Image (spheres, rainbow, N blue to C red):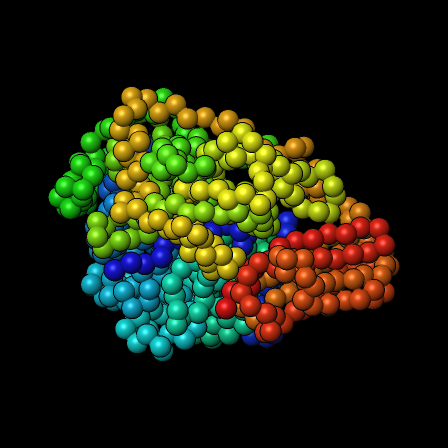
Length: 640
C-alpha cells in the first residue's frame, strides 16, 4: 500500500499573522456546574504525566544520548507510584518517523503505552497518514484495555468509519480519589490537507466543538477539565485567550519543550518536546471551587536513567525485527556508517541564512544521483530531524527523511526528475514564501536546494517576503528557459495539487530519497555540511521588529483563516486611522477574480472580511489590501 505522510505542519500556527481568537460561549450559570465541592475544605492534588510527538522513537537516538521509551517508563513508573492522583496521557503523533514504524505501523508502541498504564491518547495529524480505516485496524490490533481511551473531540463524520468510531471517543472521564477529571482532545485541522483523514473531517470550528463538550463534562460532575491539544503552541495560546471552562492545556504538534508553564487567560499551557526525550509532570490543586497550578517539571530522559527491564527487552526484540526486514534492502539499520563531527540542523537557526546543513546534505545527494539535473529542490518540511554529533547509523538517516511508504521496499518517497520553466520555478518559490513565517519558525514550505540559490528582499514595508533573485548553476535564471530538477515524488504531487503544474519529462526512479541519501553518505568518512548562505534574506526582517512594539503604522493584514481553506475563509486587518480600503483577490496570473471592498471608507480598528470561493478552482491565490498610503499582499491556498 502507499499512503501520504506529510510534514510536521507549522504554517498554520503563525502567532503574528493569525489573530483568530476562538471563543467558547458558555453561560456563567453553566460554568458553575463544576461538580461537588469538598465539604471538609480539604485540597485535592492532581498529577498529569504527559508526553507527545513520540513518532515511533522507541529506542534512544542521537548516538543513544536522548530518549528511549524504556527509560521514560522508569520515570513514569516512579511518578505514578509517588505522586498523588496521577493521570498519564499522550497528546498525539505516536506514529510515523522511524524504521520502527515502517516495520510495525505503531502497534507495539500502543501496546507498550498500554502496559505502562496510559489513560488517554489524543489523535495527532500523523495518526491519519495511513487513512482512517487502517488507523482503526492499528488501534484494534493493539488490543488496548478499557482503561486506555483514544480521544478526538473535533473529529466529524466518524459514523462513516464504524470501526474507528467504535474506538475513538469525543472525551474521557477519569476518577482519581475525590476528583472527577474530564479529558478533551483536539487534532489540528491542517490534517484535512496534509494527511488522509477523509471521509473524516477535523473541524476548525473550535468554539462550537469545545463548548458543548465542556458543559457536558461539567454536568457529569467533572471538577477539572483538561484539554489535550494537538494544535501547536501558538494555537493553544490563541484558544486559551477566549476559553472558559478548561483548567489546563496539555500541548503537542510543534515539539516545544517547555520548562515552565505558559499562562494565558489564567489557563496554564505545557508541552513536552518530542521522541520521549522529555516527560512532563504537571500538578494541579483543587480547593473545592477552583483549580490552580501547584508546580511543573519537565524531566529530560538521558542515559543516566535506567531502562525499565521488561520494556527494554521488548524494544531490543523490535529492533531485531527491523533488522530482519530491512537488512536485505539497506543493510543493518543500526550499524554505524559515518560520523557527524557536530550537530547538523534540519531547520534554519536564524532568518538571515535559510539553507540548513541537513537540507544541503539531502539535496546534494539528490543532485549527485541525477547528474543531468540542473538543481535539486526539496521542501524543508520533508527534512524533519537533526543529525547529532557522533556515529550515524542508517536508522538515524531515515529519521531525517522518514515520510511516505512504498510496499515495494517499505521505504518512503521516490526520487524523481522533471522539467520546469524558469518562470514556473520563480513563481513556485515566490508563492511558497507566503507560508514561511520566521516569527513562529514556520519553515515547512521553505525550499532547500543544491544548484539553485535564491535571495529574499524585505526592504519594502507591507509586501511580505519577496523573491529578489534566483540563480541556477550560479547563473541568473531565465524565465523562458527549461531546467531539469531533481526532487521527490511528493513534490510532484504538490506541483499538481497546489499549482496545477504537471511537470514535463517526469522520471520516477525505483529508489527512495532516503536510499539516495544513504548511498551518498556511505562513502563519506565524516559529515561536514554547513549553512552556506546560498539562500538568504537581505536585510533582516524589519517588519517583525516593528510589530513587537505594538504600534499599527497604517494597517496590519493578517493571514487568512483557515489556510488552506475549502469554500470560505476569513480575513482580518487593522487600521490605525479612518481610511478608504480596497480589498481584492487575484490568481497567480495576476488576474483579479474577486472584489471584496472597493474604496470603502472604514473607521480605525480591527475589521473582518469573509470570502466564499465556491466559484474558484483549487490553487494559490493572492489577496491584496490597498489604502491611500500602503499596499499589502499575501498568499492563500484553496483546496477542493
